[in-house]
Image 1 (cartoon, one colour):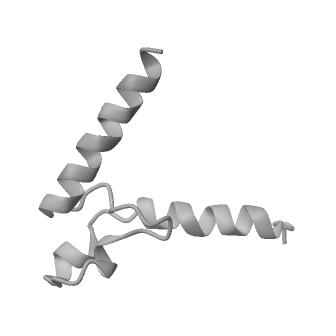
Image 2 (image 1 turned 180 degrees about the vertical axis):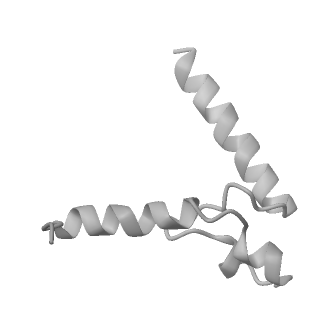
Length: 69
């Protein structure tokens, strides 16, 4: 059995949220925002709520502005 450090285990746990194929909140039809979020506090990449779309646009705009500096 391979030894995994605590930091590596935490990284794997965070990455697990992003490798789910569907947003659990969208799939279950929950209106509460909690199930739509990952452990890092950002919306799931495949979340289809309006708030998630706005967040993705803001992140893209921030990334573009950082690249242009």
